[in-house]
Length: 493
Ligand SMILES: Nc1ncnc2c1ncn2[C@@H]1O[C@H](COP(=O)(O)OP(=O)(O)OP(=O)(O)O)[C@@H](O)[C@H]1O
Ligand SMILES: O=P(O)(O)OC[C@H]1O[C@H](OP(=O)(O)OP(=O)(O)O)[C@H](O)[C@@H]1O
Ligand SMILES: O=C(O)c1cccnc1
Image (cartoon, helix red, strand yellow):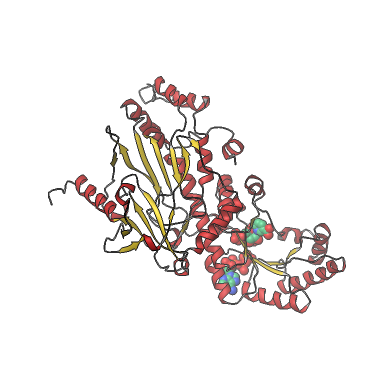
């Protein structure tokens, strides 16, 4: 995938907050630019009150890092920036430094489609402080949105209980890139196809669709419109039946379906886009069955989301395919994921990692310090707990106490001897060189479904899900507590 080249026609290095550049300049001025650092990208709460989150966006991150350099016009723009007193913001030696800068970091990440939880790193960047810092805004922009939408899609697809979900969001998505990224993330989350043709071309996602009311309205009668469509697309007939009168529309679809059958073709089905979808889908099912079309599908659309789909399922609606647009691609009920990117450790002059913590009044906002990793423990193929730990604290151990980072009274003991262990962070770049074999979008989508299988259905419930245990190995927990006390000057207590 070449998002930068195909979509943005050049450099994305200026896709950042201005303060990243002023900090970069100040790191450079103070001689800290090349000091080795570790930053982690993580979120603090699952979106949509979900019990899980689906990671997405890594391919965009890879593309961003590989193309990370300031081109001539970026540099000219920066060189021209002036302070209020007329002096330049960035001195020319710094502009030269930026010109030579290339991405040379190590980067680890959870693969797209992985089920993830609050507090655990999705991406870990290790490298020169200045580079780590300059990546912050773009990495958050990419991961926050795609992870949000992949999670929403996974919830919609879970609600559809095995039925196909088509993503119809382009017309109401958040701009051009929002729409493309949302189509990609929706497919990763489990949608079967998109109506967005450009997403189909760029990402290799299947495209699909029916027709609109305008098609019907452009003819003198609905029947005439159905016949004409059947003529043009005998293999692809999903007739939209609700332009004037849904029951009459279904009758017309059946008539044209019979004519198609005489020509050796089968209509695919009907689409209902308004009214009581439970009632009209059941009417459609009965009429289609009685007319000899038991395999014809009923497609429903109209402001659907996971909750309306669940309700329609509980009403025993006869809907086989769900067209979901606005509420999916805009993440209507929670328009942003709050992932953050925090400095976790800096290498000191002796080569040791110096863990760093941001102290906050709210304990949920205190980050996890140190160059840490994550393990997922599985028993009999089911995920039991995720542990955030420091390698040096755990080597040779097999019994671990995992402590909830917010509520230390919540603990879980794990004996790793009887469990399978998954390292969630995979190496993606080594000193700026890509060492990861990117999977196809189809494999990523499969990965999502495989990952969801690891989790008990109580964690996947849409409302009030059972909380999956994620925590800090006890030594890391202690390190974090000690550091907080130290930074707050509570050492004497
Ligand atoms: N049986 C049902 N149970 C729960 N929700 C339903 C049911 N049938 C339809 N809905 C949902 O109710 C909402 C109906 O919205 P609205 O009143 O705007 O549609 P409409 O008037 O039927 O159609 P439109 O305005 O698009 O012509 C939609 O979100 C739809 O998905
Ligand atoms: O409802 P969504 O989940 O966003 O799905 C996409 C919607 O887009 C189309 O509607 P259209 O743009 O013609 O508008 P209308 O049906 O709401 O009038 C289609 O008929 C769906 O209703
Ligand atoms: O193909 C469709 O039916 C479609 C596409 C976009 C939006 N609504 C419906």
